[in-house]
Image 1 (spheres, one colour):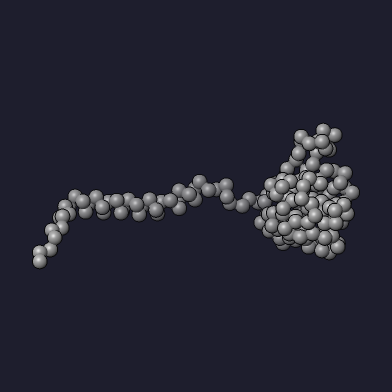
Image 2 (cartoon, rainbow, N blue to C red):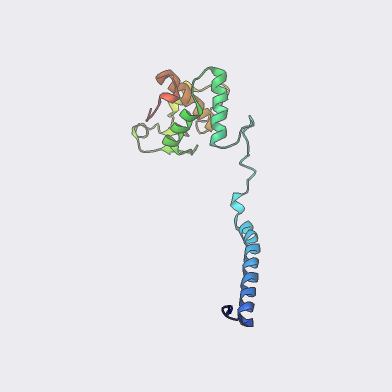
Length: 162
């Protein structure tokens, strides 16, 4: 039996393939360098610490966990899931959130922070050992959970605006 004839590759085809491989390799090597020069916004700054003073990550997960530790110490009920669910609904996790359109805002006392607390409620349910800044994530969560515990039994029982 005769073997089927194979098309013969020309030198030009091999040269083109070799240049394509070399070019692709150079592009792959250049990508990290290009990305590194344009990704400077992702590097941490001196004004945003990676952890809170208590050693928790300075993000939503850390704020909730630090609040839960304080709540446990003070006997305030609540769970991670209950807090997280309400934070996402109220502020999408933005500690600087402020509601300037609802009935509270119309009265001149807008809801603020992660759990959208108004100043009088924050002041009345502030938990000792936390900041007096309503925009402080841990203070906001802890005061809101203290309020929810008194009014609803726990933040876990809150499934809508409170």
